[in-house]
Length: 479
Image (cartoon, rainbow, N blue to C red; front, side):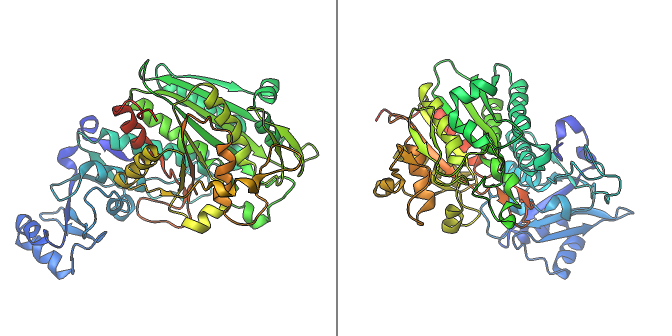
């Protein structure tokens, strides 16, 4: 449950403490409104309105606390991050309201909501909490003012994504991930979900089946369809949902497996995007495809040098069983093409090469259309959810050549791994479709305001904003 509470529902605005914001240039004006005693307190404590600086204001007449002031420095007024530390920096369980200040209310609510998240499922007080675990500290709560409902929804969608990524792999396999898509469909009128498994999956999604062949937990493909408009653009979201990646027979070192529960982050992010698109009832037709699978080791696992026929009909030589995510996406992209999607967006934790190039905070964007690329990049900038474009350099296509199949799933050279992975995916995208591939990390290695350590909904806000822009324009102009 999100710890941002709408004031209209709670009816507690009169008891909530005021949260003021200030910048170095506006601090003097704020002090004039607070009164001499509180202004002197801020001066005595050295409050300078630096970004993230927090000062509690002492109360009078038996009230221990009169409010707080948050410094915003010179940050963008639309940045949510200065507010991200407040749920656990302010007194436990306290209730707050936003006072006037040089900030954007929706961004403040979003930052607060993102910062209030903690994964508690297996701790005391969680849904399956252990009795011997120490109790969690209750976050401070914020009354979300009218007009910030979309920010509350965005934070709630991010919680959903983070929960999916953070779930332990023994509790969250292909069946559970596919059911998460079905559950999402059940929350939105008009949405329908079909789950493909067994013989139908082996026939219709042979690459997905090959990836999941080594696991005792069979693969699934979840297909969600929804219409916000009968004639709106058809937008396909294709998510890599590898619930745990051992590397297969090309086994990862043990240290490299420690975060492989997050290998389904691409699917989780697109579940969050679909939630936001449907909640906003954007005038688009939506097709969400999630390939839910586990890459495990057994006598039935796919082998290096196996050749598998894809849904599109192209044959793929398995050069490395640890390059499985692109195989999952290939079949999903082929289905999106069959359905005639005008815009195809895929998300995956696909390559370490993208992290080497851009680090953990910048998802790599590959795109075959300049207008779509700029729409995505602009949306990332506007939502403080940045993407960084890398090239689909056709000169490397031959690196995926195979002597025995139409192509190999890995490059013959140890360079440009993120680019060659994108080029592999491009072979399964219909030529007329506008397509973007996002190679993301989906994880916070260390905690920062609004971004607790663990699973992260990277690119979710950018993708939602881009789809909203496409909906407003009714798609993209003809090429």
